[in-house]
Length: 536
Image (cartoon, rainbow, N blue to C red; front, top):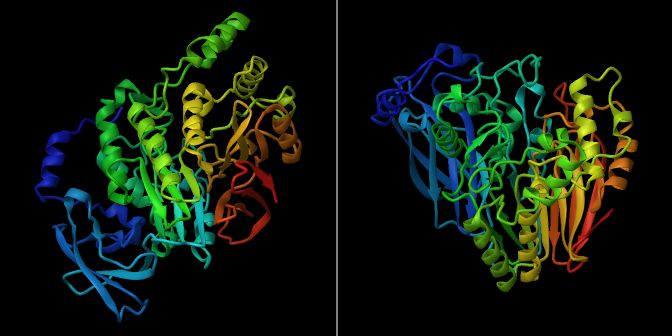
């Protein structure tokens, strides 16, 4: 239970410009004043981009920053100027939407404070217009700072072949320090130390994460399209609450609104979370919110499992297949159907569906108990036994993914098929790497690539078997699954041209030390018009 704080008084004071929280303890992780967290860019458009920094004045008062955009890194050829406000109402974060820029060009920018101090110089890129021959994007997800070093961010940040970055969420985690993980890696501490519930909590947590040099570097070098997942709010969020929100933690809507405000302060995003970004005539990126805006509450599969065979049978034929259940909500479903069709009509060759949770079905193998680490506790054994029982009844164990909303998934796939799209679906959330082919009534519709996490642990945290054996068992038990990796951290890239899309999974050697070393990669290819992937 957290101490009571008069939220209205706090927000009123900040809105009036009276306070900018500055605590000596925070200096352990970031400077008390000045440009504290580097620069960033995001939400790119044709000839437009949003530019970001954070500045805290010595007095804590609001500050007007000057912003310059140039054609060169040396900032000698200035092509645009703007202003951005860094004040208490946004906890010092400052954003400016700059328009009238050239399409599809690398540009450089910096902020200047009234005292003459300057931010670092950042690089960004607007969306290209017209004909585009190729595009490469990096895709990342699930970065829990206390688990280890953000080597995946650092590795992607130094690459010269990436045009933009897509972050699929779980950019931060809400848990108190020392709970997930129980042992915090030295040097990977976070603030506040308690679970984050209110606006100041969420702001401090973002600030803690953004002190990481790899994360600062990737923001400073590429424009980012960022969507949220559940941990930007609380674990297993749905439109009316979350698994990790209890009654004694206050009103859910207040916590949700605080999380939304902090997310928009630190990560540039459109007002409506579902959005279409056109990279010339080559790729339309359609971002979705499968998490918070329209999602119905996850079903309780455990209750059905406890009821035995009859309970499982009732679950499979009952609410699980209810066509009224939705992951997106009616408004977003209608928007997606319109926009995916419009993308095809206007000539974009590929439709990249950027969303949070795995779309494919992951079925628990019959022999999954053999994969547990020796001495696995009763909770782990019970979880696996439940997954086996569900899979034998044709029900995937993960009801928080699209597999918990099968009719909503069918509607989304039908919208893609009806539009004649060439879709690539990407998913985060699971912490492991996946590849699926999706069909509708036997006809191929889309390939899906799941990105493994930056640091958050995957299956390997509970399993001791050879990952190759686990992969073989999952492929045998899970229709549509083409490949998986259940043991490594990293990110993926997608390379598009008119004929094919190539996915490359990049696996970092370690997160225990700062390292740019990688282990054996894996690739997959989707030929245009085939709507299914093959391993490369």
